[in-house]
Amino acid sequence: MFDFLSRNKKPNLDASRLLASILVVYPSVQAVSYDPKDGMLELSFALKGQFSKDEFEGFLKYVADSVEAYHNLEGLGNATIELNVEGIFETCFVNVRRDMATLTYGELTLLTELAINYFGDNLIEEVDGESNDDDYVMAQEDYLEQMLSNIRQIRIENRLVGVRERERVIIYNN
Image (cartoon, rainbow, N blue to C red; front, top):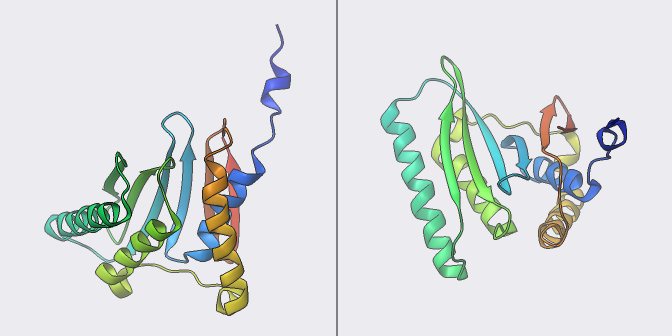
């Protein structure tokens, strides 16, 4: 009759830490979310300036070709990747959705480097003071790599969203 117990479920801490680590390691990722319904992780890159449809289509092809080559080299089959652009005027978001079942640390790094290389100074990056500490960043990278391999073994029931807010990372449980 009453469903108040199921509403008080706490978020999976490993999944929350994974999203937070992605935001810490990759300052070019402005938001990250996980949807348990389809098992997809979404990375959002924020851009300043105006871009033509051809520029976005060029980036989407650049990413698709690069990720396909990476998957072939790494022997990853049946990977799902979706790309889209949203927003108007002076700020827009490029969203990359990727299935968690085959996502690797190397691919996350590749995706962020592709965005940095293609959009350059138009890509909005938020770097905090700790990001300049090489030991801190290396520890976060190691942690992120470990979390990606561990996350495949646990069930994540709730949708999670991680965003940057100035120099902080906030994870929401939907």
